[in-house]
Structures are given as structure tokens and as C-alpha cells.
Length: 238
Image (cartoon, rainbow, N blue to C red):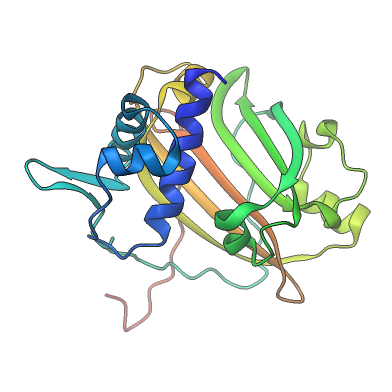
């Protein structure tokens, strides 16, 4: 296993440990993490550095490493059934990885399925007018999409495909957006310098029966992507 793949695996395991802790909790020492994750201390240290740059961990000199403090969250409600207009430009996708495998503990909690349930993992690079714009990691319970292929993720709407081919009706989603910086792999895929400003999107989607059908994590270039919201302000607006 290459150093980059091992570092990515350790980052994922660290995210599981972070999810199991409260904001501001201490993390185990690098030595303890090295033993727990069966990884070298330099690999663990590099993975911690990656997560510290994205804000998931905080290093405190002389005290250790802690999970990030609770983030202030602002909810912006959207009208039910409101169509989301397409973004500017001609969007296509390049599928980088396409595989199925057990959900595991962390993703199983996200999708509310057992850790052994098969999940489709798709990673794709979104390209707009010939330039890379985003890297997306899409996770779907495999049983929802029998026979789906990598080519189905190159163009067109995933939600339209779910409705028309699989009779799965996406009905609502919760999406968060926060600033981050690109790691080495993301920087290479997006053709930007290491640790460039970026936007991290995480979206959990349910169907009309309340079942979770998708979890997607996306990194968008901070220098090229912008979101505009149209808000209606009532008498009790803050």
C-alpha cells in the first residue's frame, strides 16, 4: 500500500474517532494512535496535520491534540419542492473510482445501515467548461441501484436517474457548507496549489419514505465557485 493511500486510510479512521467524541475533547497521543491504527508515527502525524488544516482537529502546544470546538451553525430554510437552478457553464464528470464494499462503522451511521451492508462508492471530478471545479465522493446503498455503471455518473442528473430507472424518489436533503483547504490529492485533481481555499459540502438525502439514500462529500474550488441565495425576509428576521 502506498504512503498516500495509507495516509488517507488513517485520516478516515481518525474521522471515526473524532465523530465518537464531543467538541473540544482530547485525542489520544500520536504514540497511542500509531499502535491503535497499526500505522507509523510519521503517517499518523501527517494525517493529524491534514485534519488540523481542515479544522477538524486543533493542536495546542504542550497540551496535545483536541477535536475542534463546536461550530456555530446557521440554518437557511428552503421552500419545499423549490427547484434548484443549474450552475453556470457546461458540467461534465470524470469518474475516478467506482466500487462497492461494506459500509463500515462511520458510513453505516451516516446512512443508518449496518456496517456490513454493501455500499456503492463513487469518486468523480466535476469539470466545467474544460476546467476542474470539484471532487465529489458519492455513497449510495448498493441495493438501491442494481446494474448502475460508472458511465451513469459522467453526465446527467443522479436524482433524475434514481427516479426514472430505480423508482427511488429523493424528497429532502440536509446540506452543510463550510470553508476548508485542499489536501495533496485534492490539489492535484483540481489543479490548484496545496492548501488552497475550498468549500466543503456534505449532503445527506432521504427518499419520500424517510430512508437515507445518499451521502455525498464534495470539495469545490474556493477561487472559482460561488453560491448566491435569494432570501425572503419577514418581520422576525434577525
